[in-house]
Image 1 (tube, rainbow, N blue to C red):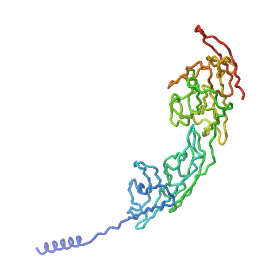
Image 2 (image 1 turned 90 degrees about the vertical axis):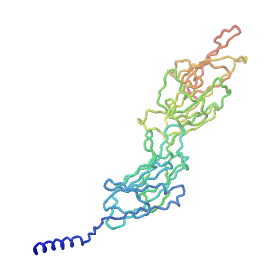
Image 3 (image 1 turned 45 degrees about the horizontal axis):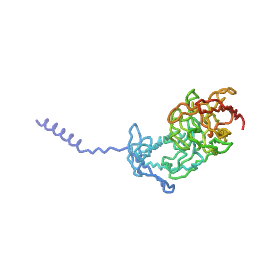
Image 4 (image 1 turned 180 degrees about the vertical axis):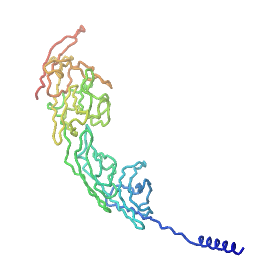
Length: 400
């Protein structure tokens, strides 16, 4: 009996001593603090509340609070900085990896800021592809993905970026033009910089030179059209080279796709010289090409950076007969085969994609490009109702 009592007593003493001990584990947390940068010196409208800061480590992605010391397990991870637009979509995302978090230590990452600016007048295009500014980094352990900014627009764009310090590369590029300019900016932590994007003007010009000046006659029933387009389709019999909506748009650029055109420019019919800007196209980069169509006569200009491509245009003013009797005429042209005259058909009216008008009343003016030969056949309808050929006039526009 005494033996049982002593064993029981020892058991109770052992159990009592086990529950009396305190176990205090040691954490392996560090702290990560992401500091903003003052953008007030840059002007513009950067809304810091749209910044989303995240830290990715071991496949765990955690939101961080800007400027606060956030508890983070020790190790290496990636800091991601995203700026949201007003609709809540990501405008850009920049990341810095191999951010090391040490046990019981504070790791601080100071962001950098940059505002890009440029001379908008150097980048506007009237027809053809519009290259944009794209951004990237070649730094190891850094990434940047963001918008392609249209350099023809300036004040309307968000051009301030608050991101981890890195080397940020700016490229002026389009799939059809290839790379036209590249510039690398070194961003420093805690520094807000304004960086001008400086490029030479890499556009070319297309000059429409009306060598005879303004037309003598203006008539709705013999409408002229002159368009510059960036298009795919080659000439096809029976189809007009004019955009189907040409009668519905005014003078100037039409920046939207229509028919087989990416965009087009509608020239004025006043007979005044006009210049438009376009970017050179990299050979073999696209199925699109530049075309200037003048009343179904096609010129395919080659646009070169810094150069003017001149297209001389003649004005053919067709008067009434010498006795001032009105009549009509039909135009023949060697536009398809040099020296071989074929009846010229003018663009049909409305939204029709076809040619249709074959004859024109006298006292009208028509535009044609230099480089072709024309024959005008004149007719009169007499009092008996007969229409007979009265005259044929050869108009040589092969040279100015």
